[in-house]
Length: 495
Image (cartoon, rainbow, N blue to C red; front, top):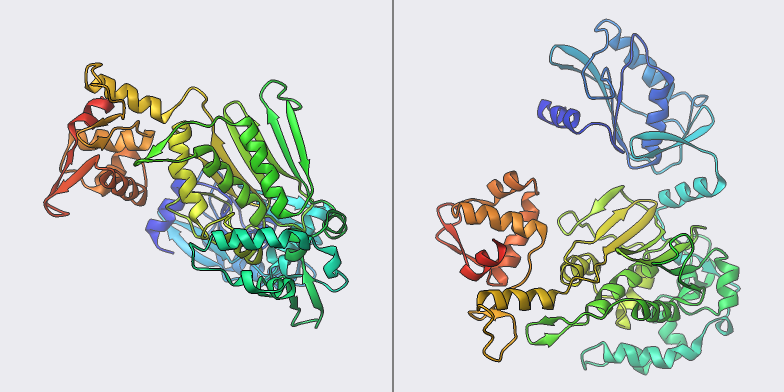
């Protein structure tokens, strides 16, 4: 391991993928508990000879080789680890002290140590005893999509084929006048084309799959196949312990989407917003992305109840997830991964969703117009999207206030919120920090801005591109020797 990386790990401290162990002359049992939890989660790095606060205490130099031998013997012993695993500890010298480093990859199996299964939650190793939690771990380890599971005894009469005429029209309307193949297909051809009917190449079973049942199944069939399936829509503004309004939705995904969109329209403000010369419905854009995400990417074999909750200062969706990482997702670290590609493709065909990854970018863009703040995406066994709410905030009103301030209150009969042909808008906190840096030093680079603002360089570069596209600033000269130029009205609005 490179010393710079080691230094970085020590400065960050323990987390879901890093564990420090003090150790003496031997390897304590909790080392193996951490190894087991790393194998069962996303992998990680374990360091023996380091205190919990990152202080390097070291292990005895003479004891290190025997510790490594004993470690390898334990993890390869089927009486201790099931299934066994091969790991190769590394003896390092750091600041004159001996440290043992073990890199643990994520395993395709569910492992136990002394008959106990451990999982990694934040920086802790947790014993897993619940049957549902163990089942969720096996789901996470599967290399197949559960939506493809075949139900050979589900018949055509178990599906809502009465929805297909409407869905054909929706698909045609979403094809930009090019025509859609579904329009000329029979019902059976459409279902096969959408991969809702297939064959399991391992078992040979043939029939409709879980995706077909969830998208188009009759309510009683859905309850038979996925008895825990439900989306609980709640409003909690006055009675925060219970709810002010509630709708429990258990029907197929097509109609669930419509019911959840209606619930959002009923309880959320419809704020005026112009993008260019076209009005955009921010409420519809935001709820569409949240609802499509929670329906498309949910793990339907889990018993965890999905929610769509509207509160005073935020709204959120959360659902069971087949997690591939434990992280906060932003447009800069986004790595789109389909959880249910058949369901996702069906939603794209009928216009309920766009391409994979667009939801994150759209929410980060339009949430700032709707509430002046960024959303939050959290990836884990439970996936959450949190959108801040602020009924006192209006992007259009902020534009108007800025325009009136710039013109001294003289609108000349026009209230477009524009100055010099450029739309003046309120900045997000990140944009304000970047504009402040540029206002103080026009020659500053993106890397220097990142250092000054504690933002990542990719985030700074993304925001700079957006500000350039909006005409807020421009670059003069070369990338290395040039400087930034801010529009005067924008600088005045910020200050």
